Image (cartoon, rainbow, N blue to C red; front, side, top):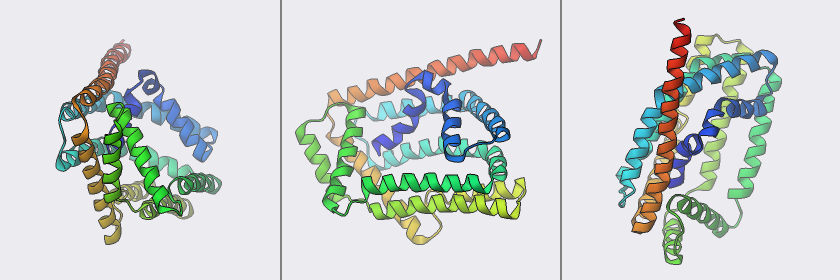
Length: 292
């Protein structure tokens, strides 16, 4: 859970150059999955440019507040409930982005051709095969080890090097707080299948912009927890387990490691604040040009 929380933020703030190329990088990722035609290319590039401008001017300040909050909280052990609260703050940022892109996402979905939908399915299948090879091993002990290795790697990424004793404690805690990776995989497939079904329904029924937007809103409403009681129960347990693991990790860190995390997040904060200043300057230039 530690790395889950900060991966979202650091992905856009750790290196300003990467953030400044975010619209282009996102376009390449989408094109790799879909294979845009010339009309879709022009629309998607324009849409992403507007999205990142909105994010720069409307969301970066809120992200800096979340980072500052996380930086302060990590100076001492965090409770499970505090971890749930931090995660909730980050989810709000993500859902705000989705609300912003719904109209353009619907327009893109409407434009998809059957061959492009097939391309998305093939890419999903390729990624799923990689997931199975990495996480769905027949040997359960190896599954547990892989999970522990990843948690420890991400913990060191945030807090710095761990002692052997700290590693041992984390591994033992994870053994006693397992995650059903088969269910994780099923939920992954469920989300992918629901999205593909929406694309196919829109294409086959020639749905309107309004109807497509409604489908996407409904998809996002149930994206995380699903619709069935079993899906919702699993998601609740998964989130609680993640919060418990993260809380435990913060309790076994020492003062030097807390300072390491403080400085690491401080670097992200500096980048975000620089981006905010850059955005303010760019906004002023845009306004001046429009008022000529």
